Length: 289
Image (cartoon, rainbow, N blue to C red; front, side, top):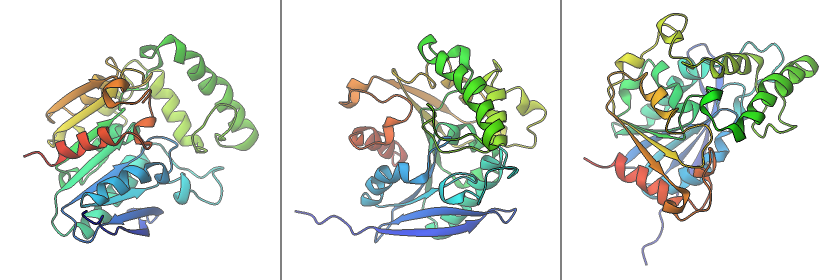
């Protein structure tokens, strides 16, 4: 029996270009054959992705997880009036994580596994050309009218009841009363809400207020995996995001949970144990010539 490689799990603190300190974790195999940056979804701490990180490290990848500012290990002492904006994650945090990984990768090919907003924001990264391929998982626009009616009730509650009450009482979006993600800064919530009420999500703003950006310069291939039971990233919303990457070859893979041998995937369960078949699909595509 082949002995599994010993994986070193190494916490790291690194700085964005504005000197904001961010928390990350390397999963380091003895002899890496590639590197993978995992950019999480809104409200998900880096530890949520630890199982897929360990899986890839065991296959030889140097993997980096990180928390966006305001989340998990990258949260300030207080989220009240912290000044964190949603787009800071793509403009500042993701590029800093990529540079930190690249410095450790020693010329290895770098791949990007992006969950939800991680795929939305890849086009804000000034150093996107360090990435050879992007695997999007559950990436689709947040425009609420393109989501199923069964999900709309929660969305409207979150945007117009939970959020405003949380901001009034605490000054940020608390993690309770139906919101299962981590607490969110006001600037993250208000921008997210604005986009989710716009039929074009952020696409229209890319032509004006969101400049500068690099969506129209990304040429690395993008493959987007979506699931039939995901109320957010679906056959209507996944193309909305890919359309913003005007020069990147792209493809959508639509699957049912049963095709992966699981009962549900939804918007977040792709990263829970039991989804190794999916992780292997991404890995095989990353390493395909």
